[in-house]
Image 1 (cartoon, rainbow, N blue to C red):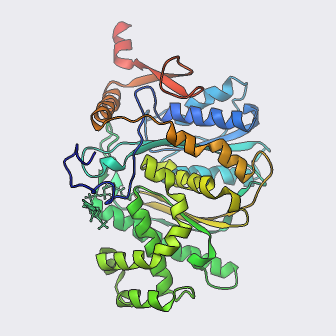
Image 2 (cartoon, rainbow, N blue to C red):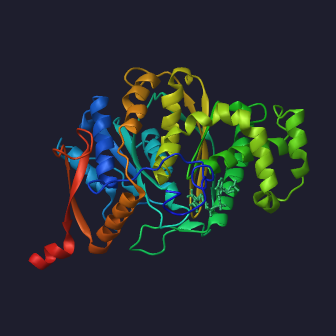
Image 3 (cartoon, rainbow, N blue to C red):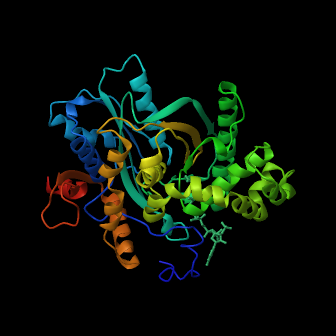
Length: 427
Ligand code: ACO
């Protein structure tokens, strides 16, 4: 892509830290990917579709301004006689998936809970207009089952949010999925929200527990990952916060490196390349241990918007499932606008089939990445043209699985389009 876009060598791969990007081909969209993820999840854990009582979807890929993606997914459940399923879609940039997850978890914890499972789907197809951001796009659907006694438990009391009104990344042109991005503001907004959430989470932890919270108190940190470089910067930022709070694990050599930035104002600190470099240098050994295992899928697939944070978590399960029981994992969810929450997970081994090793084996991350098809940048541009044409005409899709001869895995869904204008003309 660097050669095709005539940018300097290394600008995408080193500059943004990304290895590859993923995108949907002409037979796929956010609904087909979600139908595949939900169907595979139900089949692989032998869950009767009647056992689902709530389904929440997080997305920012709008394929219909009224009809939710959740309603498309109902076909899977209607076929089994289950229409009694609460929940619709949550929208706000990349944060919708976390809003959907919290809605679902709250239902299971509430007096409305009827004893059945909740399901959460995070799905997006992230396509940027031509320019530096295009190489950071991606596409995915992730399905998560929510219920009591889970191997991955949310520590509800240890979480903090930062919500504010900013125009960092937004989609004001209603017939286009291309986001408008203010490069500099968008990075600063992300880091401001990160600082604010981290301070809030530390304060809440310290009110509940005896002692200070620092990076030392969690085994892993998982970030919303628009591009890997921002994840590296973000983790460095947490170390800088810990330095300012005198965390005990910050040793003398780290202090020497960070002391010149001790009295920087917040604004200066966001603008300073020297501080960015210094904090990443101090963070490097901790990053390798606590963040690197979470980066596989986001670096291979690109920004998946709502699915991005959960794909990073899936990378951690894939890489470390054998040693995760008993560990705390901190998650940072960010969406433009802006909306952010940092929350804590506690992991335990769990009971079959919901034990961590089986979850990793069912996800089968390595094979899924391996079996992808490779396209040229020119071919990618053609697919982007197709997505644009669809929006212009208006599409009513029908979804099927197992089309003979297509590129998708057995059992994966694909769509057949019905052009609404052509249909109306025929009538
Ligand atoms: N070799 C190595 N590194 C390079 C090269 C090269 N040839 N060229 C550039 N770089 C480095 C730069 O030095 C810079 O490094 P730094 O960040 O450590 O200073 C980095 O690549 C980025 O280069 P820039 O010129 O600063 O940025 P650019 O204008 O290319 O845009 C960006 C990059 C911001 C990632 C763009 O892709 C973008 O706008 N993305 C979408 C917005 C986004 O994802 N925002 C994140 C938060 S918002 C959200 O998640 C909802």
